[in-house]
Length: 339
Image 1 (tube, rainbow, N blue to C red):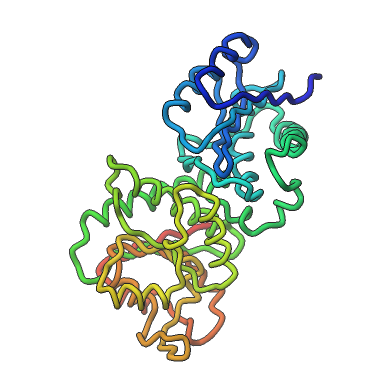
Image 2: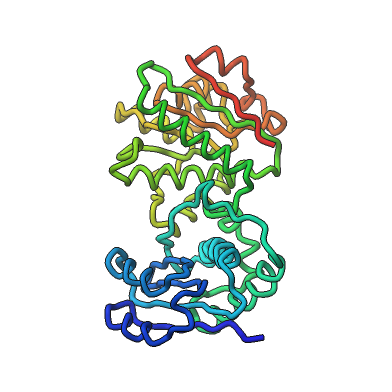
């Protein structure tokens, strides 16, 4: 059995000529890493030369091509390993990633001998990347990081992908149709440990990607992800530093965001709220919240509000609210139960 090989070239037109002489991987499944000093892009293809030509025309801040090849690669395996590498590169924090989110059409299915590629071969790939200083940390270090656990590139289940598609459709429709004083509300309810925050991280990343696309209904929308939890807030801000399409300014705690939007007399397009059971339902003057209810204030300040909610995790009286409180305040409520 042959070992993993990583071949490298400069990211320039002359490299294509060198690639022409390497027929063994021109029409064979491979993975590649494009990197510069601060940014990187990870991909997979069976048309390596053509893909590099396309990247040379489109990508900036890249100066090196790194081809990862192995004789036992197949298209299912390279697609799966590409997704896994993206997540671990995010957790490694060496580069800001230029990759975009995957959608339902990109679902990584089961395939023959998947455990071998997922476990043994991936470890070999990472070790090779580590030896060549393309990454800074070993796998076990990355796996213990919160930034890795909340990666917006995590492989989602079909159920999670279907939920993501529904949320994106809801947001696009309601942003365009918004006319009332209160924003439309989508409540995603689920118990602890079912991956709600991972799905939200993925959804928000895609929303922000579409906000940069002129052809999207969400083009130039102003959107925020809010969480009233200090450690999770820091994690989301950390993710923003590592992902090309995310900005730290779009992550906030509810009270500062409410106060800022009110002061500037602005209205956001979409506000996502993680750990929404931590939102306040009475004033907290010590922390500079003078309203009666975080959720009500957010609904006044956005066209759409999407919240992740676990009714079993309410921690204190001033964070207590329920469906009756919500539905009394708004014009439209949609509930999605996530298991």
